[in-house]
Amino acid sequence: MLGRARRLYTSAGRPPYVFHTASQWLEKPPYKDDPPKRRILEPTNPIVQWRQKSLQQHFRDAGDPPSAGEDFFLLTNLRHNSGIALAVADGVGGWANQGVDCSMFSQALMYYASKHFDSTGVDMTPSECMQLAYYDVLVDDTIDLGSSTACLATLNSHSGILTSANLGDSGLYIIRSSSILYHAPPQTHYFNCPRQLAKLKRPRGRNIGAIHDSPSHAETYSTTLKDGDIVILYTDGLVDNVFQAQILEICSLVMKTSAPDETLANSIAYYLLWVARQSMFSDAVTPFEVESSRVPRRRGEPIYRGGKVDDCTVVVALVRET
Image (tube, rainbow, N blue to C red; front, side):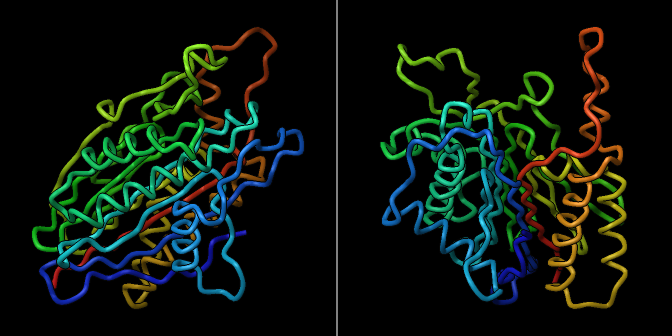
């Protein structure tokens, strides 16, 4: 099910820059062979309460909002009307084989990032926030195991400066005048294995030697935004299923309409996720198939065909100069 209409954030007042934002999310269907998760956070846990509040805040249909699966996101105004913070995290699904619900890790990472952004505003860089939030997850006894990619960004409403930090194969697009101004390069150890922040067992644990990276490995970036720029943060469920040319086409078509800016941001997020969902369940050639075909394989080993079924989260900000 698609995450439907979100309550859109716009930085209050009339600073030089205003950001119209939206988010969409989609949980992949469960695999019937997944072992049961051995630990679930209690409903009274502050991470769970923040998660539910965040989902409800961005979901305006009747009833409970759909789950984001192993993904999660952050979309918040910063203190003193200084700008906004955006972030996405994608829990690494391989943990399911050990009965670990890695959504707990990605949700916790976004929860702690939100707390740090709320307390400091644009004075904290995304890379600093990633470091602090990761440390908080490591010392949180309610999070046993797990790992996640992470992409964080702040948009300054006074200077127009975007600053970002990306670790793994989630990422960030900045689109200007129907062209790609910036695309955060995906970080992987090998095909389909992203760089990731991880919480592992003690030395005698069976998963010692598992992949884990440091926030210092994150790719950082900064630029000054302009009127009409489109900022897109995403998990890999988008770019594994939707080509860059398709992303540009969707943005261009939406921006040609005469809808209000809030609707434009929401439409871009909605159609990006809609196209990703269609590709996931089709036999059409996808970026994931193309990348798979480039990987050396044993004789007789088939090439992956069609879409990659995965959680998908998209957060969009449309920039306006006042």
